[in-house]
Length: 285
Image 1 (tube, rainbow, N blue to C red):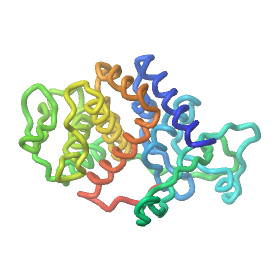
Image 2: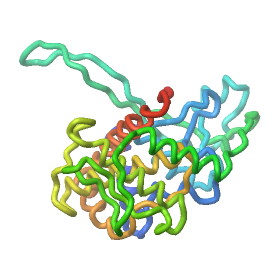
Image 3: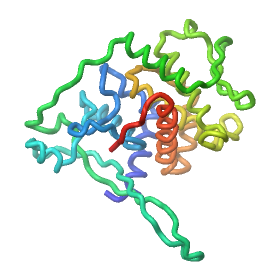
């Protein structure tokens, strides 16, 4: 599959879901207690960036119970077989490259995107898997608390709104008791920490857009995906932003079929930035 076709297909699927009132990056939570991040079934490395929502969507759409995947060749190397007639899922491989600027002759860094095909373990016969015991609720919540604390972000609890205040470089959150459950609190906290990561003296994202403008909505998509990635990493089943943002998301995605890919890349950068405060970030697929 050509990369341009993947841009179009992925964006069309997301738009379809949003127009139906669903937020695709929340569906991976349903019915699962562990292994929320898509991972390679053999290397155990998690996938990253745009590949996460692509594989989440495929697993939900086709009813796969596990977020574990392999290429055809990897399955064969593990003495397993992709069943005849099974349809794979195309994801993206990013390869760094150097090129010369035509005008200045200077060498510049770039990247080349290619697509390749993976299969869910539900499509593969003869594969032996061992699933680790899922962490308990107490362990998940303790990990989330430790994660937030490790950033050393200034967090003020109280009031009735959640936001990042750039002028004070501070995250403002209602008290945890004001949320329906602790996991909802963690999901919102991670969303606001994503905005915190985008400050000029950190990752320097464009956060200047007026409310509901396209730049504002693009930053909201980044924060939503960052929180989704981190919640999946921590095993937190959080509901994220409400349906009132869906129309704003649609306006961004309908205007540019690469917008979601760019947002996912920036979300991965933000998630890695935040995770690095507390632990080394392992290699991804």
